[in-house]
Image 1: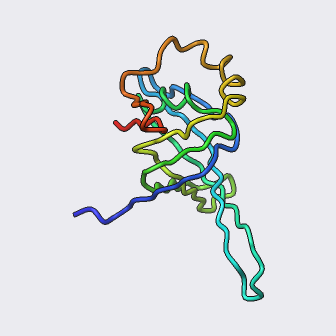
Image 2: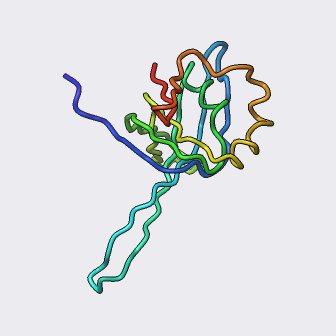
Length: 144
């Protein structure tokens, strides 16, 4: 039986992501997300804590993310944690923990953000059929 491994992040994209195709037909999109946390310390002073997370998406979701992602855009990710381990050049064990996205929602962009991203989106004729965009619902959702 599998143990629970689930994470929800809501933040902003730190930079433009990268889309690769390590093997024919298999796409990987890597992005970095900043998540802010605000709290008061023992002196009742406001403190802002920022955490950065590496996120990967695969297949159709990776393709979709590459078309929708722009630096600074708000994003909500539902996924799981994954750990890669290896021996480094000195023979010591190394590891890396990152988030594997299983569902992504992009937050709406302001008009100026939208205009900036038009150049990137000019490659895409239409929003993919698996994205949901309605006037009542302000986020675009995709899950595979």
